[in-house]
Length: 55
Image (cartoon, rainbow, N blue to C red; front, side, top):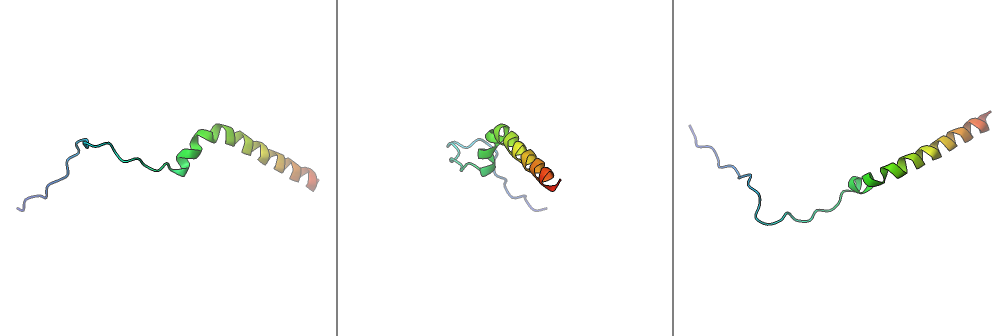
């Protein structure tokens, strides 16, 4: 049989990991408790306006 190729070790690197660029989704997630009710209120207002306009 052939000898298997050596695998990279999973030990912690000696240097700190490089700074990463923050993802757009990660930037929005903390604002969800504020944005979700506001968007819901605007949507309810628009739907009520359409219902009154159509009646």
